[in-house]
Amino acid sequence: MAEPTSVDLLIEAGSIITMDPTRRIIRDGAIAVKGDRIVAVDKRNALRDKYKAKRTIDGRSHVVTPGLVNSHIHFYHQMHRGMSPDTFDGNQWSNFVHTKVAPILTAEDEVWAAYIVLLEILKTGTTTYLAAGSYNPDPVLEAIPKVGLRGFEGRRTFDYVHLGHQALAEPTEKCIEENARIMEKYKAGFANNLVRPCVNIVGLGRVTDTLILKSKELADKYGAILNMHQCAFPEEVASIKERTGHTPIEHLDHLGVLGPNVVLVHMVHVTDKEIEILARTGTHVIHNPGTALKIVYGMTKWGKFPEMMKSGVNVGVGTDAGDCANFMDIVRVLYLAATLYKDIRFDPQLMGAEVALEMATIHGARAMGMEKEIGSLEPGKKADIVLFNADTPQWQPLYCEPYNLVYSASGDTADTVIIDGKIVMENREVKTINEREVIEKIKHLAKGVEKRSGVKPPTRWPII
Ligand SMILES: [Zn+2]
Image (cartoon, rainbow, N blue to C red; front, side, top):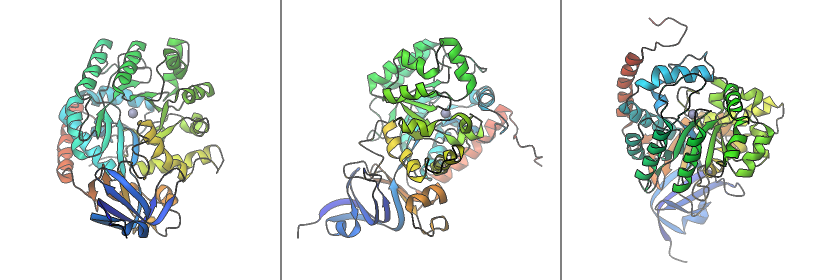
């Protein structure tokens, strides 16, 4: 018999949801990892004699999945989670947040908000994120690699004011220059390219055509993602139509800025013609059902996500900001993505657990431009791996792995997480950053945010 090949890590698994091209679920499986890459995924018996591992993780009572991709998060909004009344629609929410809270947040607030977001998403199974832009991009980009998640972040930029608040809008030239500075300064990325800069503009009709064009140019120059919100609420679409004479996606198409490095977030109010444009240009869409439901985007009335996917548009999922949906657990989003359109269209054939899981794995990977690197458990791909503890009430009985994960479990059953071949969390203990210290710091900073903003808890009930 041939000598066993030496590897760094062997993960023994109860079940592996591989998300490979045939979507195999391997029971009694194992994954061999060398450095930052997966070298083999197979039945446990087949790998046991072939590989000699420096370390073996016993995941025989676990369901193992690729690291989940949360394609839309915000860091700074986490510092005011729970401050905006749940009686606001999207526009009211945005005006409240950007006039009352965002302007008083400090760089320190934002850095620690980033840590607490990253802890929350890590502890619920996310390994890769796309963040929507920072007010303090230098300290934030320099801080976040420490947590060990794979991700993208850039500068939050907008230069055109309509529909209310003007807080933190900047001249077009400054937006362009600052985004260019960030891309140049951080183009090499951080930590084995784990964290990379991207070009973030707010979108939502809050950006001039010049800024959109220059941002796309910049993203193309650096091979980066151009990320923006779009088509979230009817007033935004009406305003863009009034200004340009076209619907938002038609307008972006006329500008020539759509394409496979463009990620559009929300996308609730789109026409069939716009769906064709998205499919033709290979532009990605991120579905954030949690936000749409809580701050009333009209998704259950107007959203066309199943139709987009049927037309070949790549759709990923995100949790969005801490004060929109108010949770960062991507597994809760999977439940919404799987179920909502069954009822909305009165058609049980729509969406479902497998489709939802694809959105948080391979579709998310494609939206990040990383479909060859992440999104499935296959030899040659990055070792981004989550072990969910199936020895828990939520996971029992276990007949159908994708159903338990999407319909029954919460992300809190994520037990051990490996990113880029490194164990970032083991048995729920985070290895890279001191979780206790982050929580204590957030408690302290929250007092300052409360005092400086003057915002009172929005509950209708008395707090004594
Ligand atoms: Zn957002």
